[in-house]
Image (cartoon, rainbow, N blue to C red; front, side, top):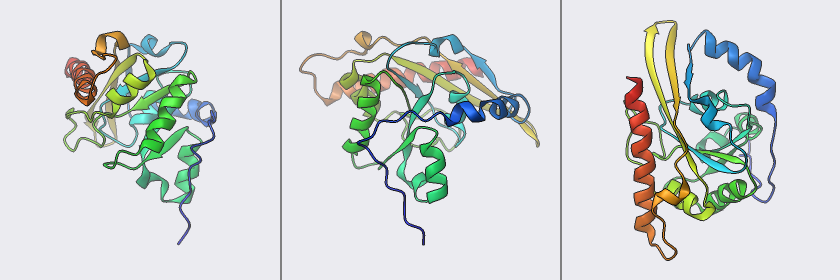
Length: 213
């Protein structure tokens, strides 16, 4: 059995593989998936910020990445890194692993530092894919990262519908940034503030998702 790829959380790199595959990605978005982007201008921001999206398929990071020329960083489940070939590919797309359900502070702190360094970090607050495609409750992690970074959060909704057996229509609806100051954090706030902020973010995502229906 091949050895699992260990991710180096001490090294902050900005791989440019997405720029290489972007022409092919644009073709895929126009043919197989008929992708419609709404609000792409909301991702054209300078400095560090958080992108928070609902999660319905393995291609969600790809669709969001195609909506902007900025290089994004993604929190991805550790299981995706168990295959060495796949791991090296997604690492070069600026994804890094998180162990779900245990409060993986090494991964969370890596994401926080990325935002502080001026990068755009993409998070799926539900923590896993929705089995029926509808937005679910958010975990508190996105609130924790927003508090720690003091960064604004850009909400994104991904909506998918079948056109025929060969293609689907995907709508990527990108909302205006939620200012960090409006997320309700106080200087000595407790974890319930992180949960409340995560709910506020997820409610905004759900509203964008409803607009796509």
